[in-house]
Image 1: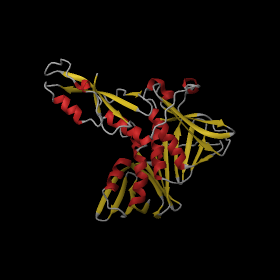
Image 2 (image 1 turned 90 degrees about the vertical axis):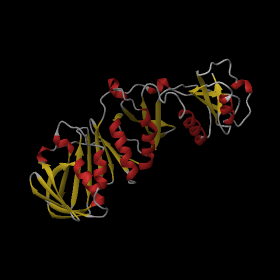
Image 3 (image 1 turned 180 degrees about the vertical axis):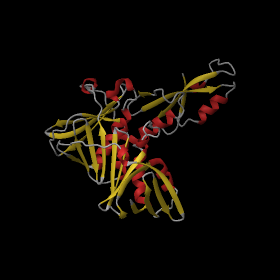
Image 4 (image 1 turned 90 degrees about the horizontal axis):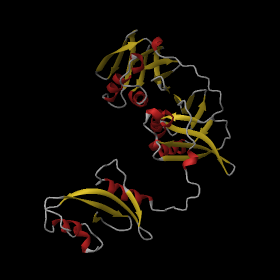
Length: 358
């Protein structure tokens, strides 16, 4: 096997490979990437046995057809250090030695026989669903934040993809929950396909997000008995689905909720971020309260050392924009050297910060 290819084309594909292969693997062959040069194109394959990544590069000069496997990490690290737009010359010298030449560099890479690489033969007979790339990426980004990390309930370790219908329109809906929060997002589809409900694993969802963000091509989804295939241009990502039944999430969504709140998105995000930055425990929850019409107050607890005098009063008042009652900041017989608990409050309708002792 011998071929020449541009460094940037191969590096882009190997970047996606890094998210698929496992860094520590009991099977050495699973740390390798399969390179097959034939019929005027280079086929790149990587797998961890749960996810299969396939890419195809046609802008290549093949001098001799062939196939081999080599370390994905080593090859990726080498290409990162080679200047952009360099031409790479690969030559398989023997079954276990792959030569790589680029500019003034010459590398000899260890190989494993391609016959040791896992083979896959899945029959995807279900009808395909073609979905807008950006819309599906938005669905994944809105739901993946709620995927559970609890392996004891494996059916929550992914995104539940299923078809729903509303007002005679068909939707592909994604739902994820960790039993504390639930995220749901739907996108309209043109087809009334027989798409079966599946649970997309966490790792697959995150890798798919990376692929969709970098490839503007249309997304085509198809299913087999226990796998799902995503085709984005020449890239194909095939994944096992989680074997389990997702809970009936509709039961936990309030039906007749009369409590709704409409707030400016950027203002609300800014409020939460400022409060979380001073929270005692980043993992602890903050508190939302409604005070008066038009106000949304976000609180977090912090601790402040008190050294007597009026220093803490001056500091608190220095943070104020509106004038609160001075009694809010009185000492209340706090001994010198004490550490007192305060509430740090940010109101989205006020400019500035307000300190409150609790």
